[in-house]
Image (cartoon, rainbow, N blue to C red; front, side, top):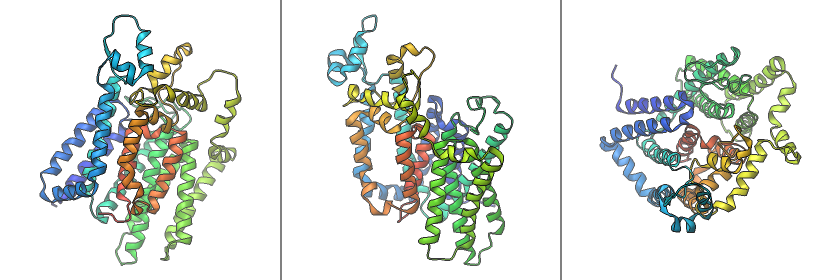
Length: 442
């Protein structure tokens, strides 16, 4: 059986996503390098095809302003890691100049970034995102291609969930390079953090629900997808259990938003009668409540969604701690010190250690609020450049499809309360979904 050209390139793309997933969402400098090489290789392969080139040229014509501004943003990030004479550094980053002044030895040049090496790898990550968009526009240009992507991601979520649940039921032992012992009482799978795992599964859940919805529509056209429906429903069950047993408060809160949004849409906005899909949504809600109520205890049902209680309670505590709110407050306070040009991507950990050397081995490598960490990393200038590059997407009415509205609720909540968008895979999936789910998809 001969595989079509589109399938070959799409399967290569799926392989890259699998690599991202297996190695902690690509959240390491080594993974970023490997993924950059793989994505670049696939991009060069796609460029050899004339039809793909035409798709890319058309995308450039429509989005040339956004691409141009994003390119300026990349060069701005490179400027952050470029060594500057101290006299010039004092102008661009007075706070970094003060830090240099406290160090021993004669230092003639230094960059704006607090950690130039980490910033360099993050720049590779942002370049990879742009290349991914180019690839998506070249090889996924029909609804059939999009459904193939959804089916793959649904299967990937199923496999990841089974592995995560198996680890969890066996006490989350460390296996080879997979470190699961950080969260003994939660499912994390290939991911170190349970919230990142839950957010990843949310993308696979949306993919699964879209596959089921589309399969029901095809059934009305007398296409037989009986066994595929069974498989995807099984995928949904395990993905749901994976999200539940992550016990991520934000992850499960977003899970509830997702299910209720689909249920609301099916009952009030869907013009076609699609009873089986409605029953699946209701079943997920019942499964969620039954599993938590019967197996994990009824008290956890409320506790999972009351995810701000502990954080806000600690605001009034006089004890020095590393609570979520304490770290967020620290990141906000530091914004004024690095207001215009930031402290460089990946620099928060160094910034925290400089200001909290009294904590010893305790440290924070992220701000627990992507919003304030991004602003701190990029500075006002970098943030404005990034927002301008995204402006055309958000002012276009075709960008606001049902799925994209759900994703925007994810963006708001994660930006304020979590750090998942700093994980390459999560940012990658968000970029892919937002582009694939425009109302006019091509």
